[in-house]
Amino acid sequence: PMEVFCTVPGRLSLLSGASKYNVTIGEVQRRLTYPESLNVSLLGGVLRRAKAKNGNHALRSQLEERNITIPTGRRKAASVSLFTSLLEGESAQLANDFNTLCGKFFPCRD
Image (cartoon, rainbow, N blue to C red; front, side):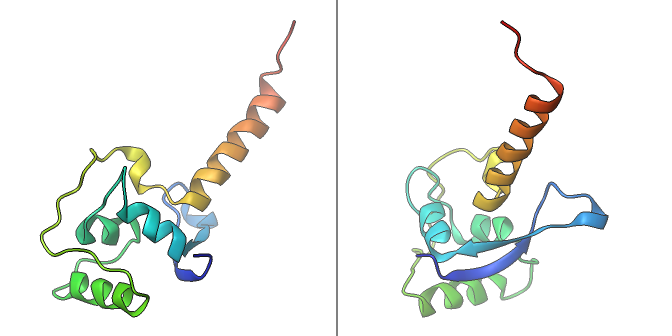
């Protein structure tokens, strides 16, 4: 599951410092199972795939090459939030940056 499926630009970066994140097979598998249960269209959005005539078919083919299948016509199980679009690496970076900023600018006082 640690094999890299693709590399995706982050959503929270400014243009000059656009970070790229590796999306692993494990992350894709987690996105396709409960609680998110994303369908191929939403997964394509998370992976920043451009909308193309055969975009979903191409993504489905790439997944099948790695023995990952998504049933046709699948509906998402959970509601989509702003956090759905964040990649695991981007989420970890966000948490780390938030921790650093809080420690630097908002020290706790007893």
